[in-house]
Length: 250
Image (tube, rainbow, N blue to C red; front, top):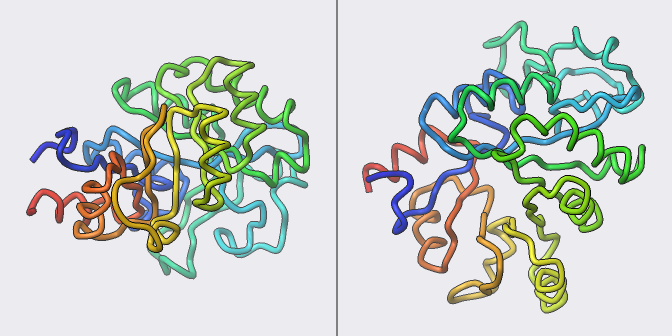
């Protein structure tokens, strides 16, 4: 089976190969790309001095064990902090740092056939404003813009990314409802992202439009294939290697 076969869902590496490496780090993203995945997803925040960094939580408690907010710190303060995720991964890693978006762009450039879904986090939008955040991220993404899709829960952010940089966009749905369908029709994103748990109450094929469906938190081939039967083209997972193996075995 080929991952790109149209009859099978394609795998998106959620925060890279995050089952085996600290999430949203260069080792996690590189591992997913070296496993042959053509789609990765990662999160972007801004530092206090407006440097885009790859990080999910504004708080450093979960990933670095520090009671600090990354959005209140400069890049100079953050660059030596280790995000080894010892609570989840134990002592497996000792020297994994927070990557800048610039370094991540360099990695993507080495895999020119790969596509990156770049999620703009709402914490940074609230702290620094939409124009500042979207403009800075778009500037850094410019060398690999053809490989990138900007996504967010925040509709204004992705609309601005399309206006400012002409980038394809994806909306991360907060809910599945008639209202979210109307909003999707209005903005016309290239992708709709959705937690698979939000789809449990519905049956049959998903709403079709200008978008392609990406469903996340998918850990098993059984669920991936069920979603594919409903029209889902992409499944997003942290369990990159095991899902890849299960789908191949299927």
